[in-house]
Amino acid sequence: MKRPSAPVGSLVLCIAWFAASTAVAQESSVYKWVDAQGVPHFSDQPPPDSSAEELAIRFRRTDKAALQARVEAESELDAAAAVREDLTQTEAAAAKADRRKVLAEREVICAAARDRMANYGRARRLYKPGPDGERIYLTDEELDVERANASRAVDQACSRT
Image 1 (cartoon, one colour):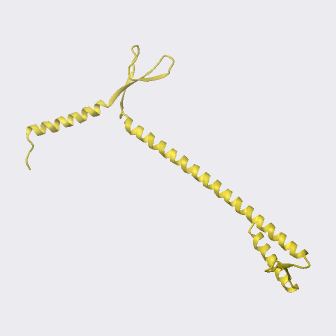
Image 2 (cartoon, one colour):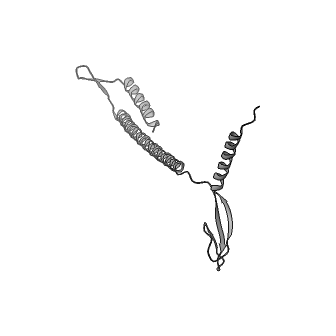
């Protein structure tokens, strides 16, 4: 393997020095001192009239663009969650309203079936309308069948509520 020439070695040394100086540039001095009342203070400037302890603090500058992007992303996620919650609540309310409507319809059907069964139980004679509008009276057997059918209709209509 060939040994790097002096200019290449100098270039590598310069890059290393620049990297080290950048890291040093990110270090800043923080001064700590305690006042006459015993309260500790921290500052980037030492007080002129007292001795302060110098603390070496390593820091990394805040990437404002990345911070802003993160804040915007979190805001968008919060907004999406709020929209999702609103949709969920709207769907739940619609489902509840639909359920109430179905139950009300079933109650109406049940009441009609009970009325029909009560009428069939009170009636001594029932009839069906004929093709020309005349009354065709049911026999006792047909009346019993119609009453049984009405009872089954009540059982079906009212058992779901």
